[in-house]
Amino acid sequence: MEWQDEGIVLSIARHGESDAVIEVMTENHGRARGFVKGGLGRRNRANLQAGNLLSLTWRSRIEANLGRFTLELLHSPLGHMIGDGARLSALAAITAVVASTMPERAPFLKVYKGLCALVNLLENEDGTLSLWGAALARLELGILTELGYGLDLSECAASGVRDNLTYVSPKSGRAVCADAGAPYSDKLLPLPAFLLSRDGLMPNMTDAYNSLKLTGYFLERNIWIVSGKGQPAARERLLSALYTASR
Image (cartoon, rainbow, N blue to C red; front, side, top):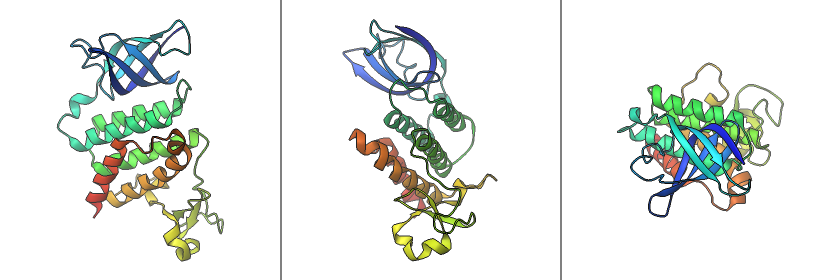
């Protein structure tokens, strides 16, 4: 078995003294894992960093096996991120979320393109922790949709109105307007307005935190609890930083 593709590095694990097992999100083959001979040696170490874009060839005698990667670095965004803790924290959270939610060897082109767009945003656009957190929340909404757990934020579940949607029901995953939700606000999840805006509404720290709490609730209920691994540590650190900044 053999295939060629492009992919973004999600994680790297040591295998022996200098070899590595890497996890990538590819354009056409989804999330894939493979062995890299000498992956942690001097020649390849810089190439195998989370966020890097690689050209990959995967080979295995049997499709179900781990397989072996040969690779070439196409682009690294890290040169523009060194020394910027917010960007690096967001990058770690983004790659960890994709690694923890995407099924192996199943193509999800929209998620791949969303991941590429987010890495490009981190590399090239000025921003703050709130912007990076909000962008991750949008990607997570897309992941939920692609996996069949999408939220319905089009209208109020109680009244059918499309305006002033400020909550989400944790049971149904549907939006609830302010009037209908007010008596039950302590049981509903906040719905930050920027998630519904097409006008480039900028989120503040509280908005970004609430958006990640919203998507995280449904990721935990539908995906992470099944794997038994829970929320990735990098995502938890980003959430904690947003919480602290929003106080």
